[in-house]
Image (cartoon, rainbow, N blue to C red; front, side, top):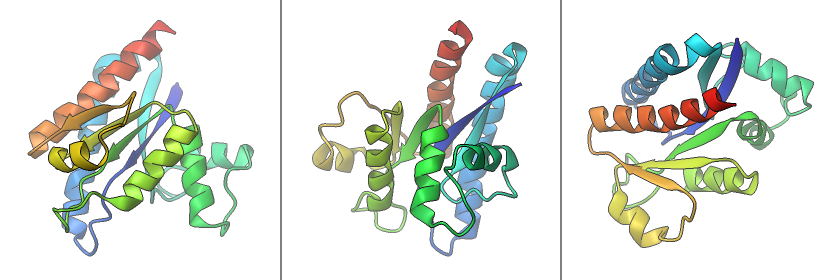
Length: 171
């Protein structure tokens, strides 16, 4: 089975482990739905990769990172992030800042810039569309998916993944 790594970056959530777990459960459920309906019958699979995905959570990713000299233990967080983005088929960035609702998430914007620099297909999610329009009005070539609840978040992720699943099936 061909495994496609998909880089997903979102707010850190600070000490709110419950909110982070809930967010990731929504993401993973959306991926599972797309995989079962659109990819597994064709021998493909989308695997979500988060910025803090550990080697024990996704050994296949780290094996490929190591083979391509994009990962070595204790090499530094940025090198690992760049490697994860490099291996991704496409990337999803949620610019929502959960603790400061009047700000976009600067760290996510930085990684978004890295992905653009690596010529990755990027998609932006946000619960703060007004801020994206005001501060990042010129994000040419990128689709922005606003959401205001968990169902809309899930549907946006499914829509993004369906788009790429359709493209992969044509290859």
